[in-house]
Length: 439
Image (cartoon, rainbow, N blue to C red; front, top):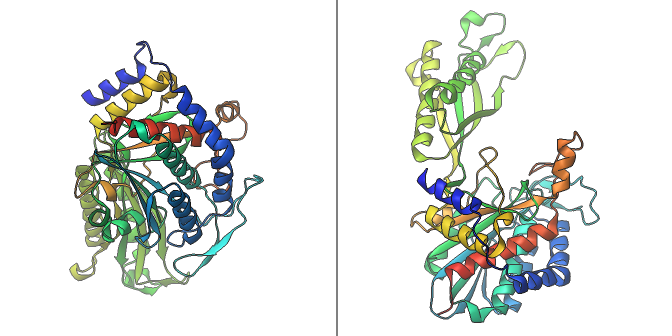
């Protein structure tokens, strides 16, 4: 709480501001007009799915290699790692995710995607950048261009990472860790990333003082039953009824077992059971997503789910060897910003850009992100920040009862690219200058 108050004071203070970095902003605007704008439109029109981002990775590698970076491809399957050594100083990583989604684009943009692709499981889908990763990789190239041009005013080693498969069931960040990214290229002293946000006005900046993204557990509850004819339910132990009772009981975990001030989500997204209307089957399967912002809350929710499932089975008369059981499918740890580092970077932004550059924002929902696989074991101080991507007039239109602003992963999702990319580059370069001062 104390750290949050400090951050709030930094954002809302009315102290005299330094002159904004006019020359840096002009250089970024020129970069956008001449190179980054066309590059963004190329990436948007040519998205690729998780772990098959072959052309995207090759283009990123080529762009960075042409700038003088030492580039390695194929890290964690399709990931790219690029290093620029510039004297003594810290090793700082900036990461951008590069995969699209299996969504057919309906935006009507002149550069809308018409792509289809076979995914890593061999299935064919239409593909769209429906989450803004095209903004992230374009800004990564923009950051590289500025850091190369301004080598005289910073010192250290810059590591740029184009990460695959942020949107996939198997984490691309985890794949890069398992491929020995730190052993091969060095463990960063600091790590940065940003996400463009449809909830924030285009170009505005926000950095959460603690949890930037929630932890996510994907799990199934397998509910055994005893089958019978639908006309003879007394001969059965109906897994549909047991599963329905579990679904309803799970809602009390949030409403009655978590503190009202502690965020958490337990959502049953899929309920599979049965094959015919007059047959009571042998099994039901519930597919859940569980969200939390701390390891303590996570454990409380997982323990509660297991307890409710097992005892509901007992109450229904299932034998001990056929009680409902949990199957953990995958986990994304909480993305936790380093509070001291947030304060340091936000102070730099406020000093150079003014308080008006910072968004008055609270996290919406409990989305997850796999960036945390980079920043834990060992712990790396990190900041995952947000850059606004929606034009302010679009929010006003929605408020007046007009067309709503499309969310991430919508086929109508679109970013106002120029302010989002330019300010994404600007915020990143200023953060890097703060962490890598000249020596």
